[in-house]
Figure 1: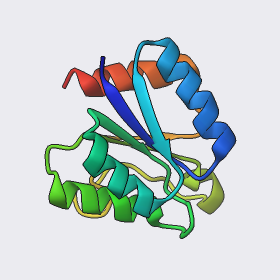
Figure 2 (figure 1 turned 45 degrees about the vertical axis):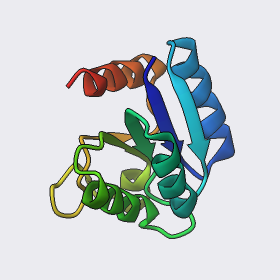
Figure 3 (figure 1 turned 135 degrees about the vertical axis):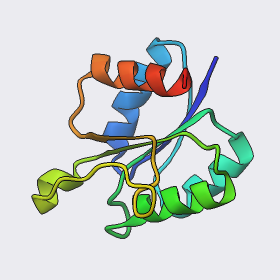
Length: 123
């Protein structure tokens, strides 16, 4: 069973995504801040991290992704955020600024989320 770390400051979103992922057989650990996300990653060693961008600071997810990739280059990371809707800009993975394996916009349909998770875990 793959373990997924979910870091998002929206408690309702975390709850809903947790239900979707656990119903598909994944173990989910979650937290709501960049600092706690880094600590939980170190403790739990997840197979995949799913991060929001905007938490306490507008770029917390970007910072966390960069910190994780610097310390754990093999870490698999999916950014799942509504930042594009908020800023009106298009975001995607980028080795320098957004070093993630996938970038998806919220809201995301459960079947698409599960499809992306499965794809990332089998890479």
